[in-house]
Image 1 (cartoon, rainbow, N blue to C red):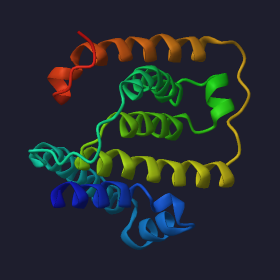
Image 2 (cartoon, one colour; image 1 turned 30 degrees about the horizontal axis):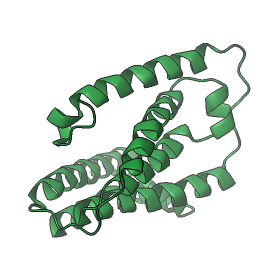
Image 3 (cartoon, helix red, strand yellow; image 1 turned 45 degrees about the horizontal axis):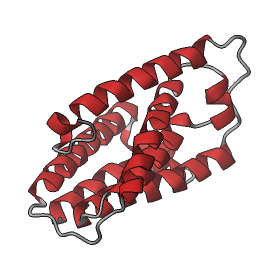
Image 4 (tube, rainbow, N blue to C red; image 1 turned 180 degrees about the vertical axis):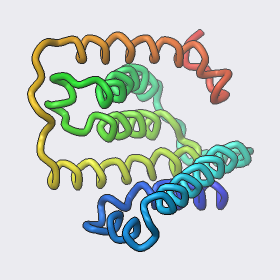
Length: 185
């Protein structure tokens, strides 16, 4: 689990720079914008690879608890909402205006749902870290930024809902092949 923890520290660490006032701008100013982006990307990708590899090698899993069946049903309900929010981050609409930071809200829902439905130590570390990071980052972003502008029409929202539900259906069917855990069938 050490590899997983190192990956989480790298990935979430660089993604936490915006929480610290002025940290991102100070680093980019010292390094230059392009070198900063290259280092940021390299650390993010390396962290992501370590997260995936660390989760894979965390076997046999150490079981902390056996989640009740209802937690899987809750995850089955929350993840499609999280995917709709994720798409809404890129589709200007009312959802984006109301939530303000739909991608962070999506990560909150996704990680919370998976944390409840998984009792393995590596899953608790993975989803617990993402939940803590996304909550802190969401609150920080909510406090420092103004809401997006008002949009007319519901096209962006409809797009977010249709694409989010479609993504959820695809993930439900391929979850076993992608992550080794069947959630349907």
